[in-house]
Length: 64
Image 1 (spheres, helix red, strand yellow):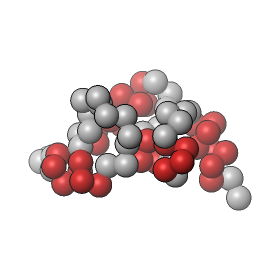
Image 2 (cartoon, rainbow, N blue to C red; image 1 turned 90 degrees about the vertical axis):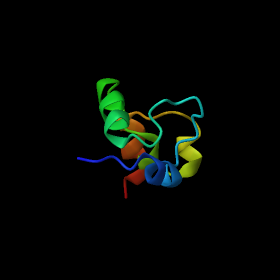
Image 3 (cartoon, rainbow, N blue to C red; image 1 turned 180 degrees about the vertical axis):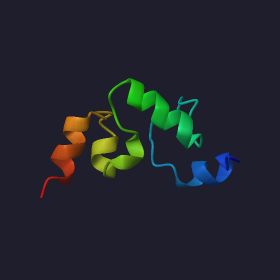
């Protein structure tokens, strides 16, 4: 499978600037999964900026 890093970067909402996984979605998901988290792009912008990427926070954001 070919990765479109530049295209992915243009759509990436992660604000963590020194991140080496920007645009490499499969690496990002694998990293956050190991940390028991979700990637920043799963969260609304105001929550993403807090860097609380926990599953509990994700549920809290989208609980209806």
